[in-house]
Image (tube, rainbow, N blue to C red):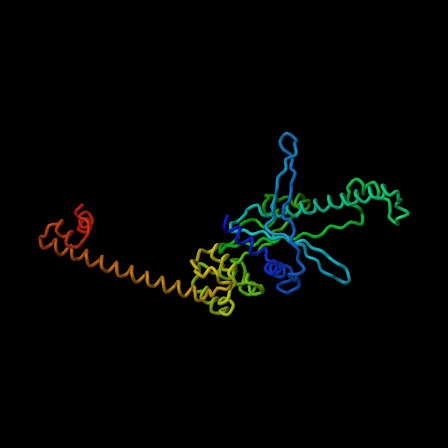
Length: 334
């Protein structure tokens, strides 16, 4: 879909992507820098069992996923960040995002096992012993899992951005998707929460923590059906809205259908001016409709006057320029 493509391309930008996670994890502090993010292949493969016990491959896709690498206390640390864009409420989002993260971890375990097998083959081919290389012999449990005791997973965090002026009324955790009241059962269940950014449920102060054009996008979406508040937001943030990057405007238009017009060659769009032009055009159309309504009212009054004077209906219709059936309707002759 066009909307999905536009929002995905927008969030894929490293500046926007970094802004999302700086907001959600660090409360707006600029900790993650765009240059620390590396694009990752977002395709994931699930292998559920079919009814006959067969393994059926199902391909899953994250909207956008990037690897974050940063030096912390002299040690390089990595985190995988994934973004899911939604223009409609997904009532199983907790399961969907949980699956993405689980597939990520399963893939890391498989990669670790593959790496260990490759290294063991290399040492055997070279005839070198683990003791000579200064490497320990893996235990039975390590061989069984393919994941050795010293191995560590790279954390995976997924944030869902709800590009809509509506409130998200779907479950935001696995437990909310279940109907369990037994406290003993609940203590045995692992929950998974949806990390959600939904403009309709955010305060203006929260949206102000974004540093990229995503701030203006979320503000516009939030107040797209509330002209008074939208006008106030445009006025308060006029400087930023007067030079909003085109792709941000594309997202706004795709989500709100506001009718913002701009030159396709422009890299920055003056949204305030575009809105003013839309209002002026709307006022002109309103005036035209008002004139038409006034002329119609005059024609109806004239038809009644002529009819009361005894003029035939077809003559009245001809003189006023309307269909005979239309005039009859005015005169309630049908």
